[in-house]
Image 1 (cartoon, rainbow, N blue to C red):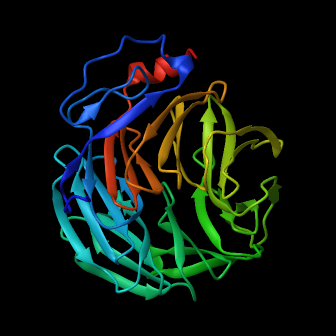
Image 2: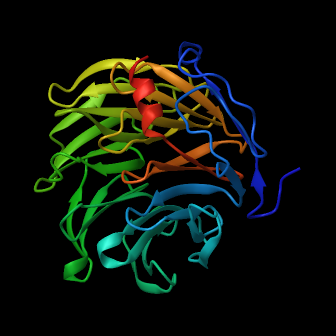
Image 3: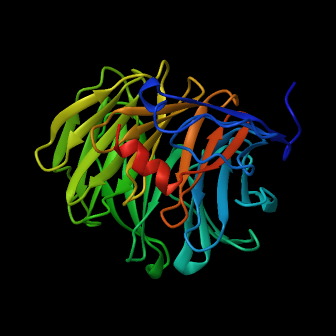
Length: 345
């Protein structure tokens, strides 16, 4: 039986067999059956039941997470207490993405009506709203220093918006032949971004050009996510798709490095922050898997028990992680010593 919104559920984490030598087993806590590696055993790890969570993003200076919900709500929760700070019924249509813009004190989110909403991050009050696309908005990403926002949608285009110019559309990027599911700025060169589409390709773009500078092909089914991952000064792209595979690409050469296998259903999302030694991936198989960036080995699998996983949010400053699923969200932390242990696999 499903618990009510806000109620805590236990979580179970299974270590990959290669990881079992890293630490002794620990006794279960009241709400968490711990494993042997890679995710810190802590009493605050818990699941919070809610309507379907389509996206989550963690604030970098406050202990907050914003979640976007299929029922049209946006919520901000305290990561430590899991208490709801506010929830706002933004739209009658599903809201599939929400991001903090910390320097403005805003949250931006997009709905299935093609509208972008700008909310006050403390109160949830609407600051601005405008029609951005002619179909579902799937993804948003915020430029790290310029007043710019990328949006991707089912109308097959990516758009660049300037909020300092009253949300002027600076450029429209065309070239995908199906829904654009995800878009992300490069952490090493934010004049570059990548997009993932159900046309089975990922594309790389420069902000000053409407045409893609590269197209990555390898998956047999549509892509749901593309994420930049750095290892020192070397940059990779990871693509996640409905063929249940992840593919790792060398950004400089545009060549396939390897495929990551293990998920048994559509791979929905990838979570990574610069400086982390691990990548987290979420799937419609209901699991989150942890991969070692050093050699792309599987380090562990978390069975969420909340049906399909749609989103993973990570904090670069605290190591906090939130995974969004059909039946709610699970909160946990990546420990620094766990990342080091994963690196030794």
